[in-house]
Image (tube, rainbow, N blue to C red; front, side, top):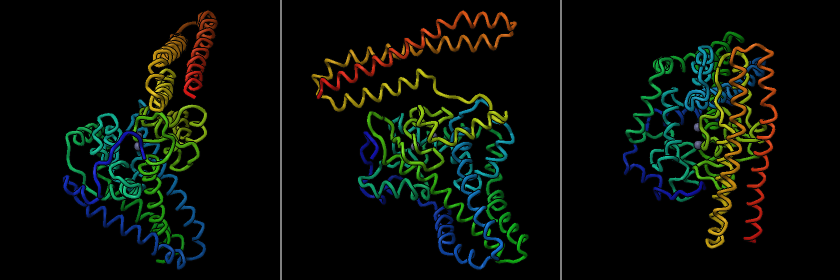
Amino acid sequence: MAVNQTPLFSRIRDIFDQGFTVDWISTIYVSLTHLIALIGAPFAFYYAPSELTPVIIGWIAIYFVFGGVSITAYCHRLITHQAANDISLPVHLFFGFVGQVLAMQGHIIRWSSNHVLHHGADKSGKHLLDPYSATWFPSTWQNFIWSHTIAHLINHPDSEEKDRAIAAKEKVKILRIQRRLYVPLIVLWVYITPFSVGYFLTGTLAGGLGLLAASLVGMILVQHNTWTVNSITHMWGFTRGLHSSALNNYLWLGPLGEGNHHADHHDCQTDYRNGFGWTGWLLDPTRYLLLSLRGLGLVKGLRSASKHVESEIIAQRRLRELETKSPSPLWSLWEQKLISAKADWLEKTRQWEQYCQQVKKLKKMSLPDFELQQRIEKLKAEIQQAKVNMQEARMSFFDTLSAYKQDMA
Ligand SMILES: [Zn+2]
Ligand SMILES: [Zn+2]
């Protein structure tokens, strides 16, 4: 279970005493689509003309990946967390008006404002406002079933925070248009298009129904893909020194990378990447999509945490981990040393970043090539020295940590 949180309820049905109500439309829709996908789809595939089989398999795969990245890259990182300064119209249309609709998790304003509340609960400590918390109940199965499915079938009580989160997203005109068109878009992309393509390719009703059933299978796969981030990555994983409700996983390869470093994401929400260091590069395929979109000029100004912020989060986690483990007299002896080592590392990182910023600024100035090279050349030695200082200070911080651990042993 996630760290530092006590359960709010003893049974799931206790939520109804707090003003929660069943969202019957979502409950019936999700139940029916799951039933049809699990029981009806195998029959539809069996009776569909055999030449349609590769199309059915291909459509399920495309649906799953396209719906998944539209949630993780577009709806989550670009829209909810504003990981880019500028998002072009084709990106909105492709991912927002097609892919996000295929994912069937509510229109963008609803999805995004709920997710803002999910992160806000960590900061404010108001965990009752989290739309899919994995910490409300005493047992693992209750938390899993709530965060993974039931939370999405329930109307949560209104709150000022909820109104504010919705109002912030409503400021964006294209999101208001998507909300207005959401139901017609569902009918078009999830139902009419696959049915028509299946019917057109085979000339039979069974062909149309076969591809329609493939849509429903793709839909529930995408839904469980996203819900896994809400449930699993808030319940199991690396816990040392973390303070958010999320956890990090270094082996889990699910949800298109969103779940692997979920604690890093909770600590650094506006970062277009999910995960620090080399494991972030390895386990976060969504960032490659965002970098490709930037390369094509379709999004501009991707935001990422500065080295200074990243180092601060890492150092803070290490200190918090030791503080909780340590007998208090020993901690008070070492605390100041560790805090100074951390401050020194962060200061040296800040200095190195300042030099890098200077070079960036110079490159943006319209200087003649010769003058630009000369000025950069002058800074080179100082940058190199600043980098060495930063690396030494980092090493010194970790050496101090090791010395402390030895003292504890
Ligand atoms: Zn989360
Ligand atoms: Zn998030």
